[in-house]
Length: 463
Image (cartoon, rainbow, N blue to C red; front, side, top):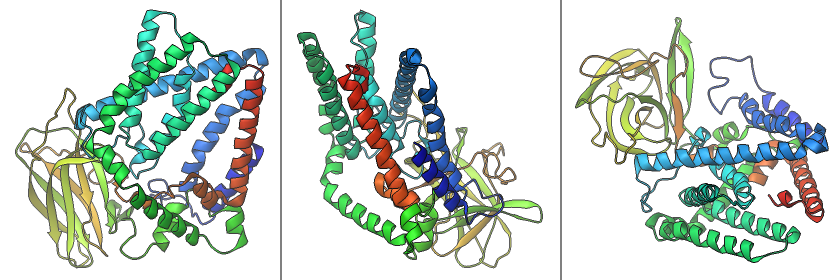
């Protein structure tokens, strides 16, 4: 553990090496050196959670373990609830053909990533490790949680998660059976669990989208291989880069500065001029600045803005959509055009209401306003933007950016620009060989200790 903390501290220092004094953009985007602090935060929170286990008396281990298990299961139950609402809101619970992948409670997936997958893999063994119930109501609760968890796993449409869950289940069963002799009751539970899981798995597998996902496995594998080679090639040739990495959270900005022209992620940043704040949107792979609004049941809106650009064409694209974190439905759009002369211009345009405003189930969808720079090799500055309904009420909050990016949230379709998409390679990129060695040491120590506990008859070690 000490080696991991040391590796993280070194990589945090490396990531912050080029940082200047904090400004408006230090903590609002992933291209800032201060992104290292965001990445380090998760590790050090986990370290704080781990430390009590080192000092707690042996007599208190079981209550602490039980509390931790309850917390993981409550987290899983909360995630299941949000995912069910998300699907009911946008496509319906039984639509297994549409291209829609859930994000649940993980807002960090606005640039992609496997945060949802990681939590499901980590929490699923706690569900497997629940004690076999004797109370009928407890049976019903456990069965419902089990079926709902399988449903959520399946509708992620993540092929890697499917494999990870199978591996986790097999490892759990082998470990549990090594310390507990099988009996008919346990065999019945396993058969019943598999049968109920198949009731969910089979309909999803018969849907069109999961078939599409598996049909492009080879194509996606080739894409990932090219991406991984590109990530390694971005690391400098000096030995320090191999040994201690490029720095925590450094991949997005490293990719930005090394990506070929036309393949860079679009940018955004705040700036000030004569005591007024404005938002600058750069060009690149698709990126939107989103804000959820209260729906207004009118046929059209007026979009006002004060914008500038230094080259033709200078256009700001404004979209109103029903939108989850990543998927838009039934959008209407408008473009505000001004002369690219480097001067501020006020402009307005009418925009129709989206056709799909409403909902297909019992939960209304979110309505979102999105801002985008639609042209390559261009910058557009936005002093203010307003979306007015018939009553001249502005649907946006902080459209002047006087409060930074409060109420605004970025989303990107180009996930490869923000992630290495490989756990071990990501550790190597950020922390170098020292990080890989520390990761292997922690994993190896944990595996050895759990095997020892299994030999001592501790069934919970299977989790």
